[in-house]
Image 1 (cartoon, rainbow over the protein chains, first blue to last red):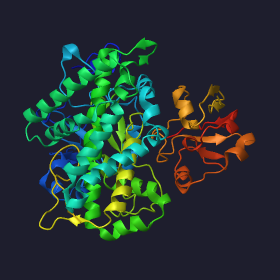
Image 2: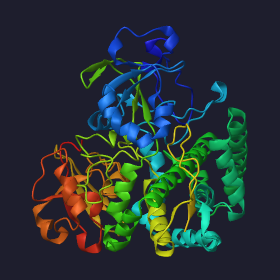
Image 3: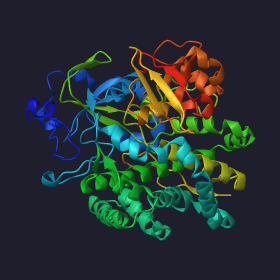
Image 4: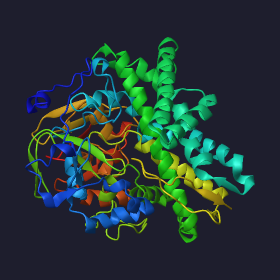
Length: 425
Length: 108
């Protein structure tokens, strides 16, 4: 693809065509503007060393890696950014750093669609956010607090008398799926079906199993959109299916890309966040007691610090539209840059002693939900799920630990979280 | 519905209706007014909805009520003044009908 192709690309959500961005496979050799001393030959966040202790590894990257490195990849080599300031710069300049082809999901080029709003850049982006933002804003999510808290307690009811549970399945998976169904306007009797699709997609073990699970979810959601078109309700699928963009009715492809993205974006991330936090709590009873002893008004800063310390999305990638310098390194139009979100949250220049969980840390911008126009629309929902889960769990199960003989292990994937968290109390 | 006037750093004024219970940051976003980013969506975690409250409204709007807003304001991109607030933390009420806020040159 020539430079001309992507530089002239004008995104039209009503008539989606693939942007055909150029790739830089390792086999093509090192681009001439990349200094060899900045080259890293493997994606750092999947190595055995990383999986042995992911968060320690990411904090150590500030000592062991160049702050701007070039990561070789068989398909799509890209820059990696570790510094908080560099990541903010990229994520906040949507004209230079675009989010095209952001979701690595194969699509038919002849029948293309965008994942919405993730892959829609300004000036169109905000039109889609405005459809759902009232529901996902702090005030909108506050209205769901009672329901979410009730659901948390129903889940705890199911296993509290057993004195043990495998947290990731019993709670980490079930809570976000259940709330997702409610918000979308889907029936709770789909809970186990959706939960197993989620599990197969993440733990399927092969692209075939993951792909098959995703295909089933996509088929179901497509049917649900059709159903909501005929029978509107107050769920998000119906809201999207009946939305207007620039005075025209939303297209089928737009509705599909929007609903599918909400499914992809919402399940893994809260799941992994809960699993990480509970694994830590189970191994730090003194910190559990500290949370219990603190005044209720501290809960927001406790959640913000836990989200910083246990950020789960490895990276957010952008496509570079023009030549630019970052951290003294020349980056060219046509390159890709990864903002390594959890690593930036451990930047010692911004968060001294970054691995320490310090609820009284001065409030700074964290990257758990990224920043800029594409910052996570589900951030407030995620916060509410973690908050109510933490409050109700500690009220009912204040003392718990990792089941003896079990240990916490991490598996490779774009979202960082323990594979199993077996708990006893 | 209460009216809020947003004034850009170049002097351009936008007066819009904002529903009671919404916050001042969202009023700008929903109406496509440039000058407020509000990138964290109102979680009080980013300082990109920084505004200066017009003098006539200082008393009614008041100073930040929580520590997080004060700490975040310290990191705001534009100069922070006594009348600086994060607009996501200001709820629109009938008492604030007619509110005037000035937006800084930049939020980043």
